[in-house]
Image (cartoon, rainbow, N blue to C red):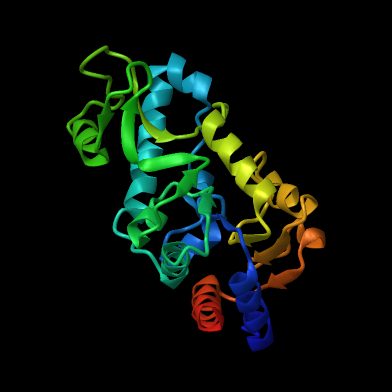
Length: 252
């Protein structure tokens, strides 16, 4: 972690009128949650179930739930790290407008963030695809463990599904529209722990930069949008964000 870069980021945070954070899997790997896309991750061990396939095939739903339970158990006990807590602290002091996240683990909310736009949904709730009735994951997992490999709604008999966005499923219209508005109106946009390759979410940092925002990328590896960034940090997210936020509050 370069101290000069941390100081520069802290100054920008202190001076910004509208800061927005955009987070990906990298912020949660520091809480012990594996990146599902990485080699050895849950997506590399299971064939992906497309949304249409899920709706039309009970066998596909059984495969889906096997993967979902495995993924859920990888993060259910995880706790927010200093990166999540730093963003929640920024919001509580009025210096962060919102967190836009690609993550489905709910760690931003557990850290205390209030305005979180979940572009890919959440794995902490399960709902009927027809009537919308919701369940806690543990309730549905118990049904599956008892032998019901593809549970249906007890109200309307439609399939139950994690409230995440599946492959082939439309992105949430309201969340995407709000995220684009925030990106366009920000003057400091923090892209944290994202490869910035999964569209349409990955376009948000570019939208922010093209509308005049200072773009900061904090990520382990290079991204396709590095050319738009005013500052790029390759250091671990938790200590970098924690130090920058502490420094920025001292500057205010």
